[in-house]
Amino acid sequence: MKLSNKVMVSVIMPNYNSEKFIAEAIKSVLEQSYKLLELIVIDDCSIDNSLSIIKSLMQTDSRITLIALKKNIGPGLARNEGLKVAAGKYITFLDSDDLWVLNKLETQILIMEKLSLPVTHTDYGYINSKGKISSKIFETSNFEVGFRDLLKRTEISCLTIIYNKEIVGKHLFPNLNRKQDYVVWLDILKKGYKSTPLHFVSGYYRQQSAKKTFKRLGYVFSHFKLLRSDYVGLNIVESVFFTILYFTNGVIRYLKFI
Image (tube, rainbow, N blue to C red; front, side, top):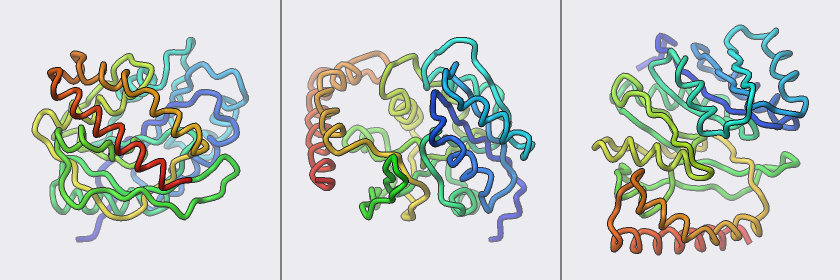
């Protein structure tokens, strides 16, 4: 099957004070081998020079839409503003400091169209603040990921997921300080859909130091509270069980990078 660029892809990119990286992130979208896309950039009331960079790039490519917010609302709610105007059959996300490889959309959309898949996600790599790409790769599972699978291992990354809006609908992000994307993926999978892992590196996550990554494991109790909340709705026993798995997998992931 040859993909003929007939289906629109909406790319949602929230931005806050990312002047060092946003030009590179935007170019990694605009230079995709798959051309029928709209890039919706939501500037979350930045106070650096990133808004000017976005406006400058808009002059070079009409596929960019800018939503400039008047007050800071956080990345989850900022993504929602993009989702409100997204016209694509497929919805995908890229943060303003991350990068895609240039065949990401073509490869992923081709498979989704051929197999009528509702959701897919991929492997991804890591890049540091100086632009050095790590040799380490986060590898996805060898099976379709459902609701309980994602509770065991948080392998779906915001920079790799694509979902078919015509099948699963639009899913808005909750007003949370952390893990807004995780809640959305769980919400989609809770409805019975599964995400198919595709084994290629579709992008690069801008990684903090391993020390800071490990420090995040201190949020174990907040993860437990999230699982118990109305957003996820697990009972106490399930929440303890899946929180232990979250902590264990977090330690294993950390050990790969020290």
